[in-house]
Image (cartoon, rainbow over all chains, first blue to last red; front, side, top):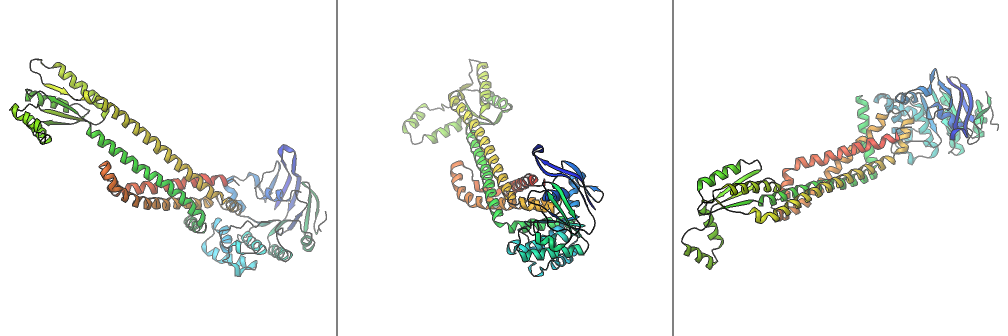
Length: 227
Length: 306
């Protein structure tokens, strides 16, 4: 369902290589972890997928759609098919947990009834029913990330991409977040996650793509964290 | 469509309250800006009215000789009234002139005695001519000069035209009026421009504090209209509130200034404020709305390119 075809990204007129000739596929319902040192190109790879960044060469396909040929005006609609989770949560600070999640649904034009039904369900899935009316400033790191995940899944996207979702979390919160992502994947959503965390990868036992200096150096179906 | 509109309005209002500090700062700056605009408009009116008052006091007087023929005077009055620059021609008869003269000098025994000894009315009739602009007197004076030159030397009509005597004063007044008008236009433009720029920058800063949020909204899949809407609405709300506040601040100030302007300019600014309240409040609130809206749209467009 996702296909990277010889994607390269060069900065500074070719002096800095972020991605070099990267090709891989992700099928439906897969859980793929992308590992590598800082600067290996993991985040750039994810940005390519949501059209936040443009490749210097190559193409990125989402189903049969060339992501970088989508007109600007259609980008919001495309991005609603992809749920995104970030290391720094990126919640809207002046909205409550409920409103943050509802915002993603409002933006995609869902009805008020849908929102009233789905938001509590999403919050229940991430185990935050009791923090519905709290603002992000009143939540712990782990709780914020769970709100972010709830926001990412509430529109029932085909795929969730998570960029270092556990990077700012303590071990217990990390464990909880990974369990939630696993649960989402079990329910049928594709998950692509970048991480530094060896423990997370080894415990998951799913497909692992290892990157180094913008290239894919390993792609194992039941991989371990090897660098 | 309706749902989206409803959500934008709701988000605009909650954003306004939850960012209370930023809203308050923006409203404060806009209030000052609109107050400056409102005051400038008021001062401009005051200036215009007082210039008009001064202009009304300037006139040309034609004094006829006591033996002047009444029919000739009437004819001159008609032809003066036919001139396009002339607003008003006032006729003072010989008897009226004498009466005014006697009243003016009633405490001066020497003059009154002299007048009695003369036995007859030594004063001639006169015409007082007013033009719309002080600069138009030159032309009227030229016309009168020409009339005087054409008259029959055996039966003179015009004794004296006082324009030539007042010419220097009138010329100076004309140039002062022109200078004051220019200066007030320049001041008005500069003040309004400064207010617009300050407001624009304040709203830009207010939106700058939300740039992270805007990028998050984009990444979550919100359309540009959906993101922009609440911010634009907030800009409009700043404008409305600031416009009303500016009027509220102006009110006591103008009440206080009313009597002072009455005695100094013969024009009560408070009465003017009350009669023109509708236009003035529409101007201020309208300017606020347009300023807030345009500033928001311009400022947010920068952050929508994620």
